[in-house]
Structure formats: structure tokens, C-alpha cells
Length: 423
Image 1 (cartoon, rainbow, N blue to C red):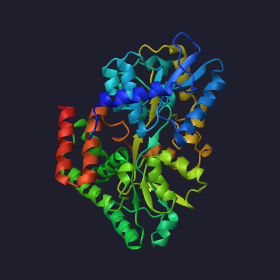
Image 2 (image 1 turned 180 degrees about the vertical axis):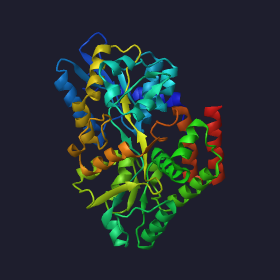
Image 3 (image 1 turned 180 degrees about the horizontal axis):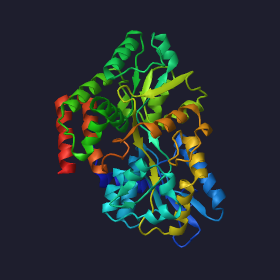
Image 4 (image 1 turned 90 degrees about the horizontal axis):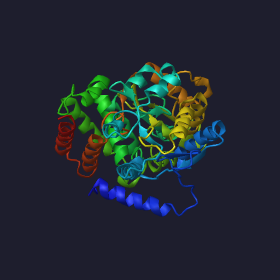
């Protein structure tokens, strides 16, 4: 049973108060030489990426103290709840992490974000960020966040040895979901207990959006968010059927696993595949694996030629206590130096078009090429396609389906969520 957001926010806020007893520096609104940066990058590869970015910031701004206000857990859900509590209390951090795109809608409508259009002009960002990105982060002619990277969400990570042992060529991606299901059955018949590793609710939503893209195509999928495609479209029904079939090949404990634990099943050789964003790249790199040797990737079957987009970005809060220092932070994350350090560590690719692809490992080179050439669509699971409220309703319906496998109930839940959001 889902707890009300206010209860979650209160619990997380209490945790933050208790955490304040630690040695972590606290923000002082009267100290202009500080910046409080709020993220959910508290552990693993995400923390490694943040540390790399902070290293560049410290070099560029040696007199400014970086206050790390990260909140761990829940793929950002805990952080968003804590952030909501702070914003409601008129206690904003200077800048906070959010997914670029529709996820910012509620903050913008509430008047909690400053317009950064002049920052873009002063720093020439409209010249170095691709037009497709600028379009996705512009709302009524204004821009409210600065992307630190670009992630791809329609990626299958494959353990080549597991596939080869089952007689499957790991370098030959299945053409569509039906062909993939044939290979999944072959793996199951070969004794692989978990052909497809899966995790908690947001990873289920990411897998489902991949299937929607595969079965509706890029235009049909994008139309779900504009009203041009109906949620009771036959393609959505097909996707629900395919999604249910895919779940038959997943680990039974998926509801309790975060993304890194699901990825670890592939690394341990107990699963062949995991559909995950390219933050998973750092996990394979840290394991010492070589691309196209121990592991490989391809676009989720049926989505070749499509780039399922999301971007981590940072805002400037209305009422930021250290506004000048926050602008310095935004300058670092948008700089070529900051983006290179961050993305090399995190597995994503820079938002800037002046990136030198050869500076990046093999997987990231494929993502750089894809983003430049393929049709770009917005990720549902990662805030680019739908508002927080709409995404939350879809997540609830998908989570319920993971337990009861009631296709009719999932379809009606998706239709109801769209009617509520678009009505």
C-alpha cells in the first residue's frame, strides 16, 4: 500500500534531521562562499560521478565550499519527497537535481524555479547543446534547468558467455519482442533460471516503456504524451501482452531489488539480459569487463534506430540562499571539463555537441552516435515524458500488474492515468 507523499516526505525529512548529527558540513545561508547541491547520487557509480564533478568544481571555484545534500535510496523517490518537504517549508537548496523534461512541470507551475534562459545566452549553451535537447527543456519559451549529461534508457546489457552457452549469438540482436521471447525461452530451456534480470517498480516501468516503443514505434509512443495516441490503442494492448510474457522470464524477487542488484545478476552469470539505462556501464567497467567481450549491448529489440532519452539536470531555486555560488555550480556542470569528468565516471554522454567521441569508452561511443543519428523519444520512467503525478499513477498500475498480471486492469489504469493528467 502506497503511503501519502506527505507522510513519506515527513519521514524522509526526519531522517535528514537525524543525519544532521553527522560530520557532513551544513549549509549556512549567511555564508556566501557555500553552495548546497541536492541530489540522489549518494552511493555506487552515481556517487563516483558526483565526486568527479565536484572535483572539477573545486578546481574552478577553490573558495566555495560544496555542501553535499544528497538523499539516498529509491532511485530518487526519497530525495524527491525530502525536496518537496523543504520547498513547502520555504527552505530550498540552492540547486537540486531533477530529470530534464516534464518532471519539472510541477516545480515550474509552483513558481519554485528561476528562468535560466539568460544563463544559456551568457554561456553560449544554445550553441553547444543540441537543438533536440533545447526543445525538450524549453517550457513556454523559458529554460529552467542545465543538463549535466544525457542517458539512454532503451539498452539491453547482455552477458555474452551465458548467451553463447545457450547457443545464442550475443552480437545478433533480436529484431523485435517476439524474436526476443524465442531467445528467452531458449535460455530457460538451457537451464538459465533468470534469462531477464529485473528490479523494483521504476525498473519495471522502464522495461514497459521499452516495450511500448517497440510495439508503437517512436511516433506512436511519443503520441501517448501529447494525446495523439490513445492509451486504449491496439498497440498498447499488444505491449501489455508482450510485457506480461517478458515477466515470465524474470527473477521472482524483482520487486525488492534496486537497479544495481538487478544488474549484478547479469554480472554474476545468473541472467543473460538486463534492460537498464547506461548508468549500468560503470558497473561493468568496475567489474573489469571488456565491451564486446564479456558483455555487449544493443537497443531493446524493436527499438533499433530510437534513442530513449533522459538527462540529469540542475536547477536554480527561487530564494536560493547562495545564488551566485549556485550559478558557479551550473557553470561547472555545463562546461566541457565538468561534463567530461562526470560522464566518464557515470557511463552517460555529455549534453554538449563539441564532445570528442574518441575520448570515451566503446559503449559511450555507440550512445554518442545513436543520439546524433536516431529518433529521440522521451523516457517515461525518468521524468522526461510525463509529470511526476502522471508518472506516479502509471508506476502504481505497472507495480500492481507485476503482482496480479491482470492485463485488463493495467490497461484501464493506464487510460485512467492519462484521462486524469490530460483532462
